[in-house]
Amino acid sequence: MEQAGYAFVDILIVLAKVIVVIGINLLMVMILTLGERRIAGFIQDRYGPNRVGPQGMLQPVADGVKFFFKEEVIPSKAEKVIYVLAPALVLGPALLTFAVIPFGGPLSVVGKEIQLQIAELNVGILYIFALLSLSVYGLVLGGWASNSKYPLMGGLRSAAQMVSYEISMGLAVIGIIMITGSLRLSDVVMHQNELLFGFLPHWNIFLQPLGFIIFIVAAYAETNRVPFDLPEAEPELVGGYHTEYSSMKFASFMMGEYIALITSSALMTTLYFGGWDFPYVDESSLGIWGVLLSIIAFAVKTGFFLFLYLWVRWTLPRFRYDQLMGLGWKVMIPLALFNIIITGVVMSLL
Amino acid sequence: MVGELVPILVLLAVAVVIVAGIIGLTHLFGPKHPDPVKLSPYESGMEPVGEARTRFSIRFYIIAMLFVLFDIEVVFFYPWAVVFKKLLSMGSFILIEMLVFVGLLLVGYLYAWKKGALEWD
Image 1 (cartoon, rainbow over the protein chains, first blue to last red):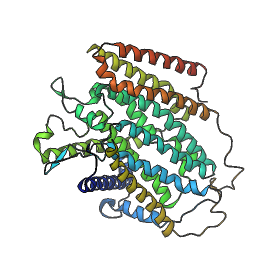
Image 2: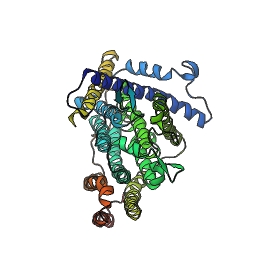
Image 3: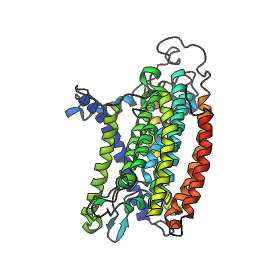
Image 4: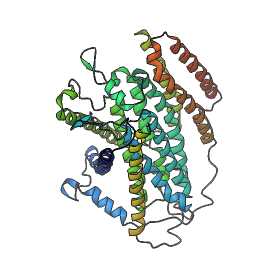
């Protein structure tokens, strides 16, 4: 990758990776929309959607087709250009974020080493934070451009909430960077690919437990999920920032939100749970099976965090807005700073 | 370095095509039967009252200002964190440096707290 000039083969490989990653992301969105309702049904002791296809498997397809053929309502008072652009501003950055996450060990085919990661940036973590902060634009512009009271309140709330928790999220990750000494996500994974004290996997969760708790709480707030889903609190704001949206534009908001779930689950896996590392196995000695094993390990870990998102959604009640801001500013930030100090002091003592 | 960014550009192109496709297709397929009531702002079925862009809490402005200040301080941590491990082998100066910086940050943070900027009522 380092040499100047791109061969035709390299471009093809990149294109293949891009299509596979986006395809799997979109497929996961479909599975999540179904899974969310099925798991809700399971938790609340009722059926979820189970009529379209076996066990309701084709429900997401039916939903998608229906969204395309729904009437496209653009309120007469809305700012048209921004109103149409806002869903794109949510979905676009969401699709881009996955680029720097390594989803498997390096694959070597006929003497060519292929990284299972779209782009191996040396500023990987910063790239992710940059795109995460972009997605707030879509929400706040969508809320503002609708020119209606509920969306405006939803947009404002989401802006305030997302920027508040972005600070503690950024501070929580600093512990990882201190341990790894790199912003490259493949370095973060390689660093976790050993054993700690000879028996524990060298995963950052064991070195940064406090950091992980801060990170996961901030991630739930960043993705506007229960217990922090105040921007779209149905009982008080109807639907929040997307109240005035219909058809596929509404679905774009939803897709962006679900892709953000996938990305943040993958990020938790990569930063704190060893990424594609399968514990106690040296993947590089197993050839193609090692690569397969690493991809499965990554998928299982990410899937667990996705399930956790759904599980939490149907288990916990919603915060009050002052509690939300209080937690973000008065608890998370001091804790995150404390985590940095502890990490620094322990590392200098060892 | 430039080579590393080519995949991002490919991904960007694919993402733009997908997003434009989704929004374009729904514009083509969807029926359009506009009428003034349907296109009016949604207010739980009542006649819309007044302007949508009313005054909102001053707290949102304070949060925005505090965010800009604190986020820049977070950004200052990153280069320090990257070189921390390497420079730690040359003595604990880098640690003391960071403790001083966190101390300064805490002074500003406590000031904002004391002034009531973090209260939400």
